[in-house]
Amino acid sequence: MNVALILNYKAATETISCAESILAHCATLDHVVIIDNDSQDGSAVALQQWLDEKQHRNVTVLNNPENSGYAGGNNYGLRWAVENLNPEYFWVINNDTYVDSDAFSPLLEALKQNDRQFVGSLVLSAETGRLECYGGGKLYPILGKARLLGKNQSIETLQQQGLAHIPDYLMGCSLAFSTALTKEIGLMDEKYFMYFEEVDWQYRAREFGISIKVIPESRLFHYGSLSLGSRSAFYHYYRNRAATRFNKRFYGPGFALVSAFLLSAVTTIKEFRHPTLAWSGIKGAFKGVAMSVK
Image (cartoon, rainbow, N blue to C red):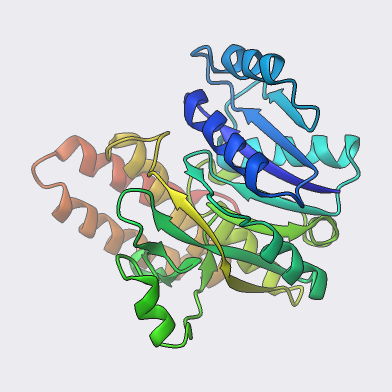
């Protein structure tokens, strides 16, 4: 069985639109699991009312009893699916996306050829049709930053370049993998709460010989971040905390400490007119250094 996971947080309308698009276009998907991450805004009721009205037998709506972040919410759905659906392959897809063609079958075909890999899609802007990223991005760990591959380019330009781009990581916006892989490497680290969860997961998987691959035939459209809105104290704290904790795990505490200073400087420069936001970023950067890693 092939299962899609869609995490909802205070965006039931967008989540329903995403689910309906993959139900309409992705025939090789057997089941869609929607996880409401304790939205407390009526989302859970709206999702259940939609399901009752449409009577999709291949859709399940779950209510996570707490907002456990991106990793925790998706892990909640993944565990439920493993216990109840006997899935072979998973597709994690952001709720602020939609498809207008079968974006899952190319991912499935790649996994059937090699299930010891994560595979991802081309992510296109819903407004312009141009690339938001060629599957993922490049990391600059010492700065705690990342750059999306191919952002704002046209698909034609990338095709002319031979699609010879290799990201350091795949975006969690569209990420497919086998159940067997999760049993081998474990699930996402929920201590991140927001940001770097899927990056950490893929880097940990490297230790098991797991690779990543972009499947350009798989394409989906992305509206943009719905859960966070504009950059805020929340954004700076969790984004910087995740970056330095990631660095501590994979590059050591000394590297993470240097990264925290540099990231704090960058945040301060960007938010010099908003000292409260800058301070949130600084606290997050050094909190990440202090957090435990395994």
